[in-house]
Image (cartoon, rainbow, N blue to C red; front, side, top):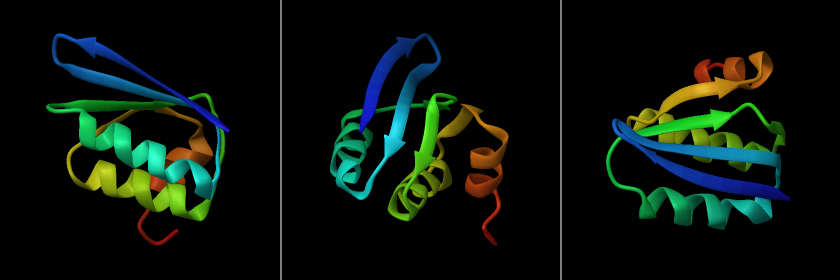
Length: 84
């Protein structure tokens, strides 16, 4: 189960995802992604685990211009290293 919050800032939108991403959460993450226009900053510091599908969705979001604002070192490594 996850909690997604968004906060509009002057330079973009901060999307915070907390909890544990399961495959069943991917629809909601995609819905939020489609609803936000402009610059996106992902705050994943409160994300304690992420299913493989979630990693793909978050990588896709980063590949299309979102910036990783915060994440645990392990999650950051997984999201930023295409070989993982």
